[in-house]
Length: 168
Image 1 (cartoon, helix red, strand yellow):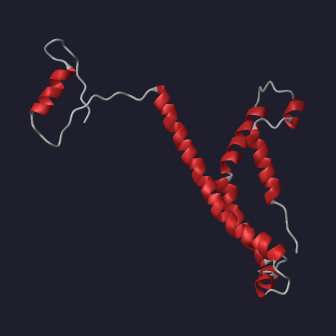
Image 2 (cartoon, helix red, strand yellow; image 1 turned 60 degrees about the vertical axis):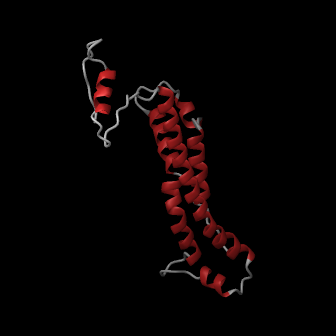
Image 3 (tube, helix red, strand yellow; image 1 turned 90 degrees about the horizontal axis):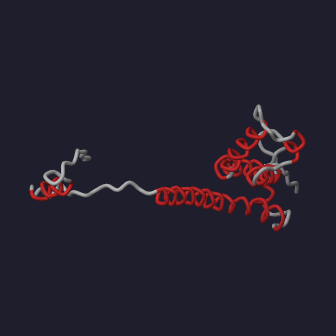
C-alpha cells in the first residue's frame, strides 16, 4: 500500500505515520520508506537483465551446436562412407535433392538464426535505417562501404556461414 501525505511538522511527519502503523500491532503490516532507485542502480539492473538474456541465447546456441556438430562434422567427415547411419543421413528426402542431414541442419539452424542471432539482426536493421534515412548526412560512398558497428559485421558473417552447403 502506498501512502501519500502532506507533512505538517512537528505534529504530523512520516515518523508519526510509521509509529501509528507500528502501534496498531497488526502483524500483517510493516512500514518502510520507499527510496526510488538511483540512476546507477537502474543502469546496473538493466545491465544484469541484458547479460541474462545474452547468456540464455548463448546457452541455447550451445545446446543446438552439439547435434549440429555431430551431424555435420562427425557423420559427414569422420564416419566411414559405408556406415548405415551416414547412408541414412545422406539419402535425399521429400522428393528433392536435399539430404536428411541438410534438412536436420536447416531445422537446427533456423531457431538459432532468428532467436540466437536475432539481436544482431535487429540492431543491423536499425543501423541500416539510420544510414539510409531521409536527411542522413552520411556520404553515399560511406553508406556502401561502412559496416557501422560490429552488429552488422556479425550479422553478415553469420548469414554467410549459415548459407554454405556441405556436400559429401
